[in-house]
Length: 294
Image 1: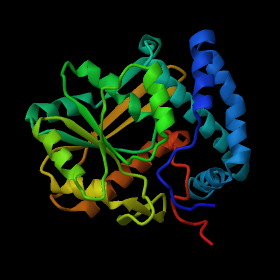
Image 2: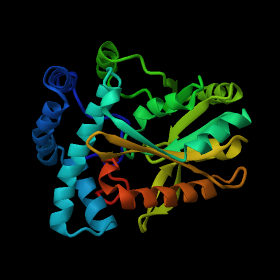
Image 3: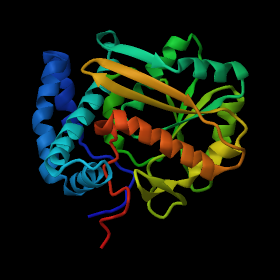
Image 4: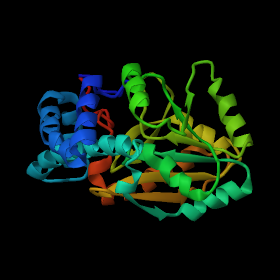
């Protein structure tokens, strides 16, 4: 079993096609119904992520064994819902959902400074629908998502064929560090760059930080970049609160220039506070604390 995240999410084009067929022809409820079986499948046949998630609930959140086991299933189920919701919102069904803005004034203040801004998020909730919140800001500001080029190309191509073209632009992380120039260009144009700070990829640079009571590896890049560039930094998440309601949280980071460690510590504490409210929505299905190594 792999103990580190390899940068690739699971899933097949056929699985997405089934969900989208149900959603478009039978309604969202039917797509959610299919998830009851899909979530059960992952509980039994995705042993690595199930084991890691059990550790998260049982050892780090201190859930009793039975509650931890049930929470694994619930987490897979909610994760599936967020995927369906993302497709639905991008397929002319945005009006089916409601949204709550918490801290959006902080994002507006960042844009007024005209320096650009960095948003540090996590694999918590459904950040990929954030562009629909930004549409309410009455600005044409572009959002750039810093990511690796390891997702399934076939899935990306299929989703592009059945949904609206996303406004979020992708900046690929490259070995030659050319992505740094793209980030600087975006910030110079008063645009937003979003980075996820909770997935360390094997053999990449990392920082160690206590998280939920035990040291864990975090990717160094997001915190080094955000602490060195003289632009505002926010922690931003989009959480699912009910079947068709989402809540955006934006919080200002307060750290010293070029102090990546302090920024990481603040991020970790902020993320911990979010997990207390939304424990099922941390979709980081790998051995985050490296406890399953042989």
